[in-house]
Image: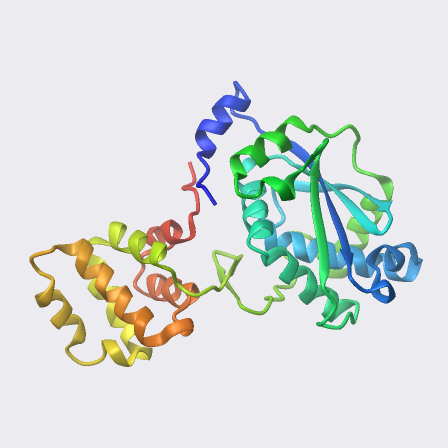
Length: 293
């Protein structure tokens, strides 16, 4: 997927920097016996389905802020969830999570735990903004954001959603701090949930381009659980690639880690090492988090 220049998009879409947009997330599954719409129509199951949706959105958008549910409606065989986003960053995080399949994993995890839907049931999702089916444009997230921005909400929040939100708030004590039930294969950073995927060559390049002289400090943390970095390995890398400079030294460090640990060399492990070495801004770069003003 192409990177998205959110600053340029904000300037293009609005003269005052404000951004909002609306789309509908359709939820279903391949098992008629576990149809989310049917469960939602049952008054006893309504709150449980709403809770699954809220937890899935929290995981996908990186928190509770910047968006709201306007309405849940019957789009047989799907349950339609109309969403309004009031800021671009959480909307982009949602789209990235949706595009890489994390949202479906979050949905499956919470539905399995709360609704007792078997793990083998496949969750089916679809996104529409106005007349545009976004699933066909996920390789171009900038275009998706434009379609969402052009689709402005036509209604205020439905009374039933308000009631369910209040019920959820009473259940948790405070809606702004729901219990952190971490999905499988995920990790937390700054109270946000991220997909814990294997490190890639793109991660390797980004790390090398930004970590600078701190690559050794990160390596000292990684070596605790990596045999290939034990002993004098890090100092040997510094000596061997001294002529090539800091970029190549850092690149070879992470490459050695990935080669040694295979699929166990995951993003969460690197972020944890960056946190331990107090390189929070570097962790934000690796995760593609926009710096706060």
